[in-house]
Image 1 (cartoon, rainbow, N blue to C red):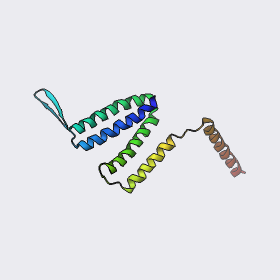
Image 2: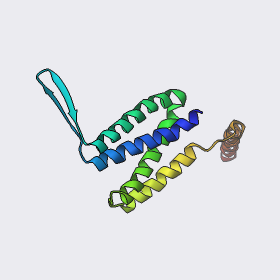
Image 3: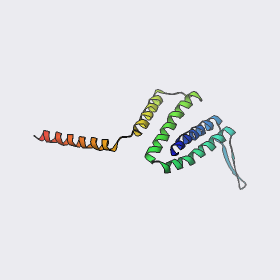
Image 4: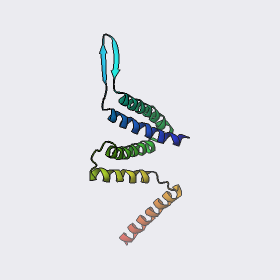
Length: 141
């Protein structure tokens, strides 16, 4: 169940960004005569609500998952999807640096989420230590 919250968070975050950009109106906040008012376009308001919803959902995700797992995962996916959407929806330019960066982010997400058997990791560490000891002994002889 908790893994279903990740795509919901991603959709809300990306929709929030897209709608706020599409609305093109950051809104105005006024304080006058002891009253408070906010004014923004409907599309911007929908984006704002989506983004606020994603924020509250993210606070839940941070509690449910390891921070070292959930933050890089969601930030990386958000960056790559936003890059793609900005190119196709808003016709923004995509540089070679952006493409290479997106590929590196995807590779990073994959590498971070590879699951190793802890015995394999410990075995690899022990083998490296044994190799290092053997090399040091041979060098002294």
